[in-house]
Length: 241
Image (cartoon, rainbow, N blue to C red; front, side):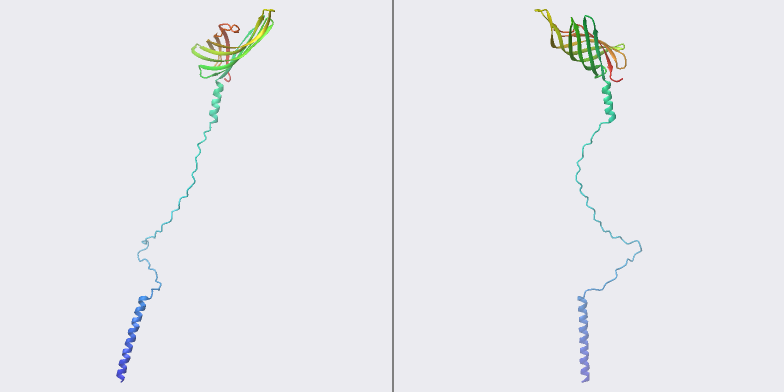
């Protein structure tokens, strides 16, 4: 009886051990690994560790608004402007001629001019014309203006041969006799007087000169105040030496 009881207890103990072993094996298969492990340390010599490269994000370029470029402003240099101004003044000259005649017939002629030297040889200019005439107790006044050109053809010693041309617009006052009562009265007429000729220029300085002109008057009107040839003498003086 006791032997059977011992055999029974042995079988029960063996079944209990098998059941316990089977339960532990199943738990090991489904239970997650929740144990925190210490990270592995490098085992190589110092300085051999490879650095971990983390790429940095590149900053995006900011788009700037397009700037419209203005054309450069060119300013004239003050010295250059002053030089051009001086050169213009240096090319200007004034002068002219006048005539005086006194007696029973009086004639005062004024011919002032202002000229500009385009080149050393060629010049242009303008002027005023005024005549005062007294004849037989009557006084007459002629006035007008003129424009001229001159060219130095070639040099002669200290001077030059001139070619001269001009046009004179003259308001001419003249006397007319009334045969019915033998009296004189005045009339006025505007005339165009073209003149051409030659002359001689005598230089009296770096820019000043004396001119002697021999001109032909192409207007043959009976009241023309000039008789051919027209002889004029004048002087040219620069505005600045």
